[in-house]
Amino acid sequence: MEYIKITANSQSEALQKLRQLYGNDAYLFEEKWIEPDTFLGKLFGKKRFQITVGIPEKKTPQLRPQGPKTEPLASRTSYTKKSEDFRKDELLQLLEEIRKNRLIARELPPREDKESFQAPLQKIARDIEVIKENIASRSLFTPTDKDFFGLREALFKQGFSARFVDDILSDARLALAPQDYRNFRRIYEKVKVLIEKRIRVSPGLGEPQVIALIGPTGAGKTTTLAKIAAELALRRKRKIELITLDNFRIAATEQLKVYGNIMGVPVRICMRPEEFRRAVEESTAEMILVDNTGFAASNDRFLEEQKAFYDALPSRAEKHLVLPANMKAEEGELVMEKFAQIGYDKLILSKIDESLSFGAFIELSESYHRPFSYFTTGQNVPDDIMEARGDFLAEKVLERYRQKNEGETLKKE
Ligand SMILES: Nc1nc2c(ncn2[C@@H]2O[C@H](COP(=O)(O)OP(=O)(O)O)[C@@H](O)[C@H]2O)c(=O)[nH]1
Ligand SMILES: [Mg+2]
Image 1: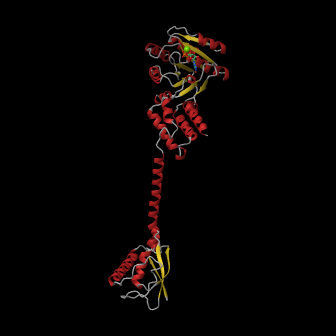
Image 2: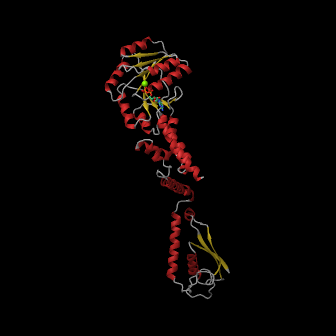
């Protein structure tokens, strides 16, 4: 008995080859899938089917026109068809195929070219992986209320514009890893930083000798001025002086005088620009803090006269516009526009303790390019004031959102 192996792409193909070469005289010993042996096969990872057959002596390949003498294969393989007469044209066809395959094999790149052949394929495979990842991360998250624990709604309640809210949401989406999209703590921390970045601050006072607080009546100018004066005079031991501008002879200057007396700081009242200029020139104080008795922002004459006071000064005064945080957004914007006639450098956001929403002021500060210098947080002089800090206001913005979701998370646990 002679043993030979026949390899083909499938079991049926291998058996067909066997039948064509040896008719039904062969005994099947073994059949199995094997690793590819050709270069092309390896490249595409295609397995081959191999059968080992025993051929009785003198039955080596030959064209056998006669029918089978034995039928050993029928019982062990799917090759159960009744044997058919060998057909010469089939064999010729097979030989022709083998010949063609040899030609193809000869035309293949030589072995050392394998690398250059595989490198682009590997690159394509890597590109597909990247594309798949991108698609996956995009479809995982579209910023809906549900995904960010109601962040969109919370920001709208803060008085932010749709554009601001969209900016924050898409920045948050980029800043967060997809697995954090449902992690409230991570969202809160990231969003807080994103909002903080949008809050313009220039804490405290600048260098000029004359610092003035301007703004509508009731905004908190006098109270805030007293708080700042206390910090400078009592804590920092600076030599300061207070001036109130009272061009309309309202004489509502008692309040500041009382504070001045308590702190041992001189208080002057100026009724005309000229008087103000002289007071500043004659002053020996390191710093002069200026308050004014005033009118509503809609009073244009008042604004013009205020401007005249500052125009009379030989050097520039630094002006802080006091905006109460409990003011409506449109009113806040009107105040900012009106007081632009006088001009101001920074914003003091007062009465933060009396407001629940801060979005409009953050955006106004940003779009008018006027940073916050101070925040005031209550009526107590001198304690309820702080130099402006982005993280503080960002926390104020997100305070209720945080509390609500922390509560929800606790309930779930
Ligand atoms: N709740 C609260 N009230 C404040 C704050 N700042 C000032 N006020 C109050 O607002 C009112 C008007 O303040 P005032 O300083 O007289 O405002 P002005 O007219 O701008 O000088 C007073 O009753 C102050 O006590 C603050 O930060 N929080
Ligand atoms: Mg006042």
